[in-house]
Image (tube, rainbow, N blue to C red; front, top):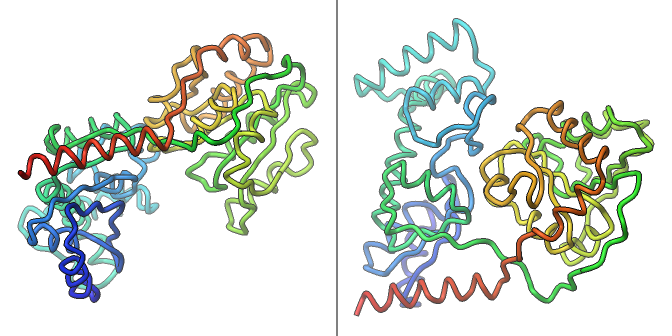
Length: 364
């Protein structure tokens, strides 16, 4: 990177005890070359993996868009998955897959051709680099912080030593006023969605499910930026004319918990989540959560205990779960006593402080 020399000079001038990288970019941002420079200066390094791109080229850990992936980087499997994600199927996909793997086995890397064909045939090399870079980063770092225990397991499956991994659960400010009392639930069941309006968040599944339930039994309020991307337009168009679906615009982070307290259930229909903070916000507001059974949701939601899980990318199963709540409103009340305590910023800070102290003590 062009700024690497200047970055190194800054590090030398600052003389830090530890350098903690919070995120790496593959393009012009801070990346593995910056980490290597700090390593060469013999300064202890900590990395935080906020996203799953360190092990998954798509970042979703969904194999061919149909099933949850085990997270193990496999050249053949991951290459096939990438082709599917790019809409390449049939004979073309078979040809590209066989040819790219043959070139890979021969050590012929076509990505240097700087063309779409070269890129397509070079995916095995790209995927191999993901694995190589992951292990290099692991070698450079004293500790790697993960935000979810399930991702810690996946990193271990890919060869990252467990001794280098530390799970620090995300936190939220303890200064927010947490509502403790809710009115008795009555019809309509008030469901709320809070998040980005993107396909990965699965909002269309929730809209489809709610549309199939009687309007006097359920309502849906959607909080999220009403962007002009095709997906957002499609969702608004899909819900147009539904008297029980309302678009509420964006919401300030300081107002999320108080706003959530006005509802009965939060729904999170996403196709992927690392460790969604909105679940903790819902718990803080006294709301149980109904969510897709992807890794990040399933780690926080225990079905029938503090919420409910439905099969990801399945609006029919989501409708079934919503139907069950509509048929028995008391089930929502019954799970409230089992909502988990929230993790605070203080908890996060203390965990990091303990980690830094341990690293520095080991240097002495």
